[in-house]
Length: 359
Figure 1: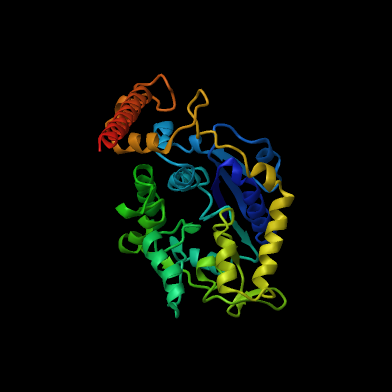
Figure 2: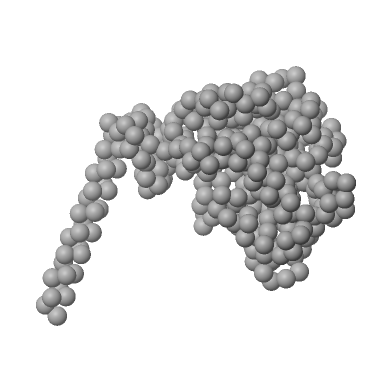
């Protein structure tokens, strides 16, 4: 079985914790890291629990730099996931099971139910929520969020090589959509790679894994009760993995405190141990590593507006040789338009000031 994750260098400590937890609980697994940087990182190369490191630019994308320029760091990390599955599918032709886990996950036990599901199904997903919420706060925090961001959490995805071929058909469909439409743009009905999967049960034979020990996360703590009795349990079942989503922003901490106010609860034991694991792997230093695709070749930062302008004009994909090159016509044209707009704004402000003086 192959387990993989997609990261930029600032998420290396999280991927290290994930890889160690995966291989200690499921020792037969091969762990593959997809690194979305221009070059590999020494810390990644030295880490014993990474079996393979593949750069995103080597996954087989056509016009990779044109594709990646359109995305913010979060969008980019998810946009490569479909092609990552295609790469693994073709590279490891002898393997039958492929699993993606977000880097901010820690595995606590053998993934028995998932492995059994992959023996019978080509696509295995976990929903954000498995039970209706009872209170209005939880409806707004969790159910409305699932409607906006997607029914299924794509921090986990498992694909099997079955006789039906459903798994391969799915990953090639998903990869094609993410290459073109993997944006954080909820008003247009898109949230990175996740919203696309709302369509998956309509198009493919999907198995929905509802075991409470999979993908335990801040958005379902209102319904999943964690205890410790000879191991961590969730609603009486073994905890398989916890998803520490929103860890850096503080959202994780806020949701835990809101839905599990009892500080003696086992969830705080999990959280504290996770923090220690991250710190032991250089979170303070590695977590601040700048993204190598965040700048033009000359080191000048790329604005969000420039990325959006590039992706919203489809013709630019064909006429701009490389948008990371400041000498390219896109950069020059964008700068010219931006400067003209700023000049118009300044003229407008000056005109308003003169008119106000006359009043």
